Length: 313
Image (cartoon, rainbow, N blue to C red; front, side, top):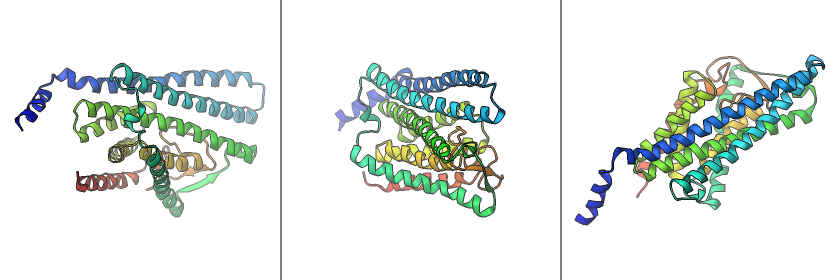
């Protein structure tokens, strides 16, 4: 018993810089991720303006249609580049600093169970998104107009929806890999307690989202609560599949189908939604900006925490 206690005392007396070094590395990769998104936005904006000058001789209606298509393509390409970059960063940081080059260590280890949890979480995210949408439809807070793609035909509507899905999927997988994968993993390895290793990346994630798209307090608190809940689910399942599936299910319904901002990205989906501010919707941010999801997310945090506490060791 005495020999077991000595290593714990030695570990507890580690210097503060040694204990915080993994956290600083985690913050560093988060900042690199945010910087990459910002740098990709610059060429998208420049290309957008250049394309606008190139089609200046067309009619206003033709110009707006071509501009929307060009911007959608650029966003899809940028999203896939961010996803590839996130995998490269994590692999580099693990090899260079943590001597661990296997991505399975941070949440992709259980492939067979992962697909099952991914499907269940995808369905759960869709059902959660159906709550504000259903209430908005029932209360008259939601109506629909013609999207720009609808002016050209069904084929363009489908292409817009597919493009939006690619953008959302790329960003969501990349964000989960960084904020629910690498960051908590490095904090766990440095000896941080489970709640702290979950809350710290959630706060960084909420702050990162505010940097991308300044929003209201409702959006910030919804994002923070969702990040904590997803972090707890990732810790419970030891896999990123649940968090990725839940966010994809939410974003595909909110963004790809109803064209609401999903994760700060304003995209054109299948239906062009016209929200009326109320309980379920916010005019600028749709369901993500209303106060309705917050109590539901907090209830999910409590349930997940209680079930986790009762689970035998």
